[in-house]
Length: 407
Image 1 (tube, rainbow, N blue to C red):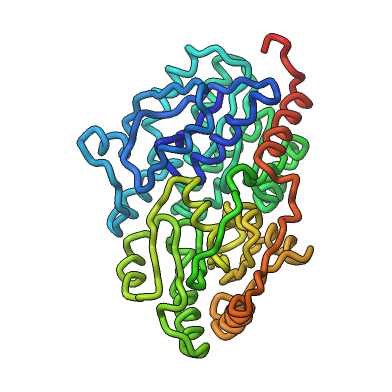
Image 2: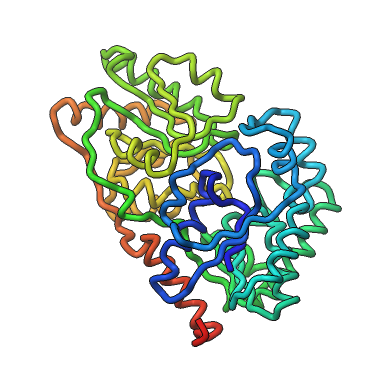
């Protein structure tokens, strides 16, 4: 059984990772059952991605968390506002999805399954998995899509919250039979805190699905594309200033270049972005359409201003696109791209404020484009396809537990 709060029609990486696991697990003789919540209000929807898992059994339970309650009250599209933050912070034990726990637990104990796989955030889902494992005696597998105690998007504040999270993180780690993390930084952090768990902690990164990447033709206008959410630690202003300076120094007009943002943009950034005529915003698109739109560009850009726990989840998808990549900002969480660039993939990482360095690189690629020269790369990480990563998960389950013939 896969316990995932995020599941279609919700879009984004939180739904994509369990979707891709569920898509490929049957190839390795594991039949997934999905336990998730009923419809909630959310900022980004994707009603197409579920086609990847047609036929998979999905069980949706009630919940009393804020997003579900707002949906019941009639809201459909959620827009983040500044005053929401303090409220969310106050009830961050370990997140505001705690009211889903009793419903997920009550339903989960009635389902027949051999293993419990829980992906988080929300980290309250881990608590559900812990109690179900205790109740049923089934092996518990936990999947960290982000660091927990160091969770960067809603940091824990105050001793009470931190003690609560430390207590539950330790409890989950000590009771999990298998611990999956998406990044080496999370693994090394957990090993430092829980050295006895070293042999149970494995890295399975976010990957790419080759079938989602089809040959495309670039638009007539030189296009620079960003794929993903725009939020605080991905402030786009330096990138915008860079493109603005590129236009001014290249002797071209604003109609000769397009900076495209594909994905959800938080409202605090949107009004400023819309001021620039050379910027196009698509909003959140269904996953397959977003990838297709992204791949038509001439140059890909990535933004990060965060710590090592801010690691872009789409690094392998950027590499699978074949586009040259400029990274605006440095982070320890960029090691997949750093390794690819060292292996020869056309990509460059600049300090966040290095406008001149980025401008020169954009100018270089643009001049090649004007001469009909296409800059392309091939991902060096063929082992990071979604299918092969799911195979790795299946192998780890067999290795640690042994495969149950009853399946």
